[in-house]
Amino acid sequence: MKAPSKQIVTLWYYVVVAACCMIFYGYDASVFSAVETNKNWVDHNENPSDNALGGINTAYTVGAIISGWFFSGLAADRFGRKFPIYIGCFLVIIATIMQVCQPRGIGVFLGGRLIIGVAQGFALPSAAIYISEISVTSMRGQTVSIFQVFYSVGSFICFWINYACTKHSEKLGNWDWKIVVIFQLLAPLYILFNLPFMPETPRWLVSKNKFEEARAALVRIRPPNEDEIDMEFHDIRAAIEFEHATSKPTIWNQYKSFWVDKSLLRRILISFVINGGQQLTGQGSLNSYSSKIYAQVFKSQNTIQLINALNATFGILFTLNALWIVERFGRRPLLLVSAIGMGISMLIVSLVETQVPPGPDGKPTHAIGIVTVFLFFLYELFYKPGWGGTVWIYTSEIFPMEVRGIAVGMSSQFQNVANAIVNQFFPTFLAKKGFYAMFLFFAINTCLAVFTWFFIPETKGKSLEEIDTLFGGVNHIQKGDQLHNGSLQKEMDKASLELIEKVSTRESLKKPVSPEEV
Image 1 (spheres, helix red, strand yellow):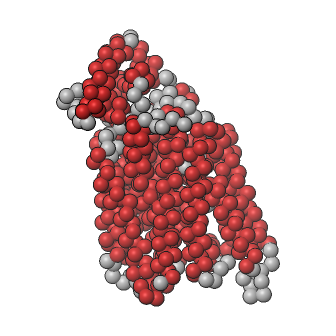
Image 2: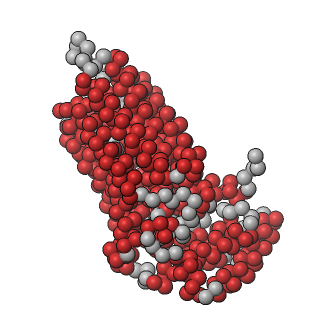
Image 3: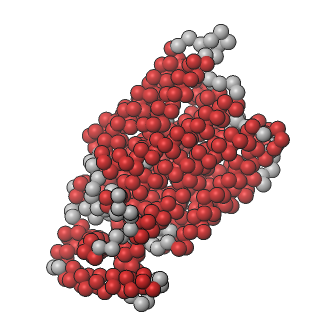
């Protein structure tokens, strides 16, 4: 097997750093589930009610909705894909300090969750766009899949730290949950250390007419094939110049285009549905309230936290499946099989818990508990590579450059809209109806499977500039070429050869190429 080139290794390094945004998302999303049944946390926060617990999660998601819908996309389009990631990391650090130093009562902890939600709304859409825009077409499914893998990594770290602290809770006191909270700093600090050494995406640089910097960035992350680099740069520039020629890049025109352009309207509606659907599958509720769900089956707190930790561990393995199947089978089959599998899992767990007679104490038997855990793990097996990872891939690739930042920012917040609605009412629903609540998720997953079958086209193997035609849009590359009557190609042929020669010379001298020298 041929070793990857230096440029591809560099590409993966950039992907991993950006994907670490999902580590702090996975960690932050799991923190509350990890500590909500912790006796020391409950006592310190004066035994919050079910409505207060729902309010904590709602604050988190409302914060993400506000920043993601209104600010993240605009910041990413104006200042670059890296800028919102910086903001998100700094906000997580501030919120973590607030939560660790909080006085008694739920107020400061809730405020910290609100700020972390704002941080996620800034960082996640931009990180997904960054990965999608720097990726090679044939690898884009794999690279963006890392996004969801790292969500599982964050959840894994959180639940295992919590499990270790729970076993020593009597000695640690309040520090058994504060240690779990402190580790929220891990991912943002790592990102802040590495992000300054990473370039902006070539596509964003072209959109700002920084052609030399864009070409230099592309050379750093593509195999040293002059013809392929030249062709990709040509396609990017042609498509973006067509977009600039047909619509002035103002904020009003960006939002208006979703209503004027039927192709964009179709894409934004599909994106809203699949992002909202991702949380309505049941994943958001299971992740946030897994401890309460398992408490209806198991009595031991150690057992519950061990199950959570094992679930997070297997979640990584399940998500890794996407790395090899997403480019082999495509996005559409993954979404379809995933929805069907999740629906069947939820149906069976509902029937087992509600129809099988309980034990003498009125509680589900140990055997029922084991079957329930197995079915929830089976649910995760279907969710992770499908509606977990593929939704981010699809959302980050189907929009043209002109509106990608705003579109992904708005679309991804439908995850939080759906999550806010479900998490506000799910604790009360679960407390009153028990596992009958799972029938709802069976119905939702069935609807998502039908939606996928009828409305979602396949995007595998298409460059970001070619995807427009799948939704009834024009080919931006061809239109861009027609505007210049081929003069753009001739100009870029000469410029690309000069740049590649300079980069190769500098590589041999181990010196970076500066935009001024190019």
